[in-house]
Amino acid sequence: MAKAQIGVYGLGTMGSALALNMAEAGIRVAVTNREADWIARFVTEAGALAENIVPQEGLEAFVASLVTPRVILFMIPSGAPMDAMIEAIAPLLSPGDTIIDGGNANFHDTRRRSAALATQDLHFVGMGVSGGEEGARHGPSMMVGGSDHSWAQLKPLLEAIAARYGEDPCVAHLGPDGAGHFVKTVHNGIEYADMQAIAEIYTLEHHGAAKIPEEIGAMFTRWDAGPLKSYLLEITGKLLTYTDPETGHPMVDVIWDAAGQKGTGRWTVIEALRMGQSASMIEAAVGARGWSSEKYTRVEAEKILGGARGAMECSEEVLADAFMAARILCYAQGFRILKAASEEYDWQLDMARIAEIWRAGCIIRSAILDDISEAFQGDIPHGELILAPRFAQTLAQCIPSLRQVVSQAVHSGHAVPALAAGLSWYDTMRQGWGSANIIQAQRDFFGYHGFEKFGVEGQFHGPWWDD
Image (cartoon, rainbow, N blue to C red; front, top):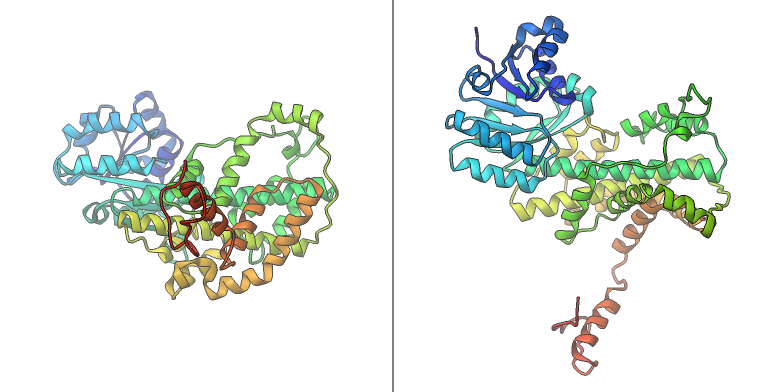
């Protein structure tokens, strides 16, 4: 029997979908799983694609069924399970073999594993996969970090299964060790902020303008036909038309008002703060999900503090422009984080290429990514997306609408943490002289117990009291 070109360990939702995608692309793929009874069922359900699938129950047989140098993709939970599998499989591998972690792993773990395996001449790849089950099955966006050797092995396989934007496969080798997983983490952070901005606009229309979900869904669908086109707007427009068959109410009103999270948005914020970067919109989105989990506290607080919200009077055009400004700002913050990490870890991330591979297959695919890619191919002042001529012009047109929406929301008692955070960041960035001199003066004053040694315009700074 011919050996397989790649092995997939883990036949859960994503692993199964990727394996079938590979088989359909004509790639011979070996598969195995910790629960062996899953394997036969997977092969049966693969139907005609089973001719390109090599099922193996034992780890040794699985490794032996692969061509050398071997390529093994793990689609298992991150953290300890991945470390355990590396420990089990590494002794069975040979120099030059590649192990891939296709889960949402912390990039620090990826860097650690890459360094450890390199001492055995084994290559470790951290690969971010976006698009969910549907994307994995029919074409995901993939962000690859690892050695040039491993990319040479992977490139033909991944380009064959990746989503395509025109003829361009949405997969790229972004840098060594943790680069791929870090880019996927920031992708998810941007996703958090974009989702939160959509949710806030929905809330303003529903609770502020008394519109029913179906009306708001129709508005999002109209937006999705223009410059705001994106996957998240598309699915939100659709889901707002669904009716709960048991109650007859809109499905969105039946869903429990508490949003879950898996941690990647939080990781984005942690890394941004560690590098001294602003991710205020992403932080607001992460915080909003955390607050949402306190549903019972919020219900009680409504009784004590009052939950009344005033009416909102914003036209659809104003809301659309406000959302355009917010979307630009959340992407700009995301790319700032990528730039900072690229410099810190010497990854030399290609920002234009990152934008390109996000144009199809991934959750945050949107029309704005073409403009972002084009901007990064040019000369952007200080590498700041909001200073690129096209985006600076768009923001000049749209910020007044964002300002109107945020001010009306605040005045009427509507919570808009992400929209407000984006506006505050924009206003801070556009002001050459702000309030930081007061903060620095406070630090210097308490550091020296008086102004007698205080310098002018921050020229003299010494130890400070407790921060």
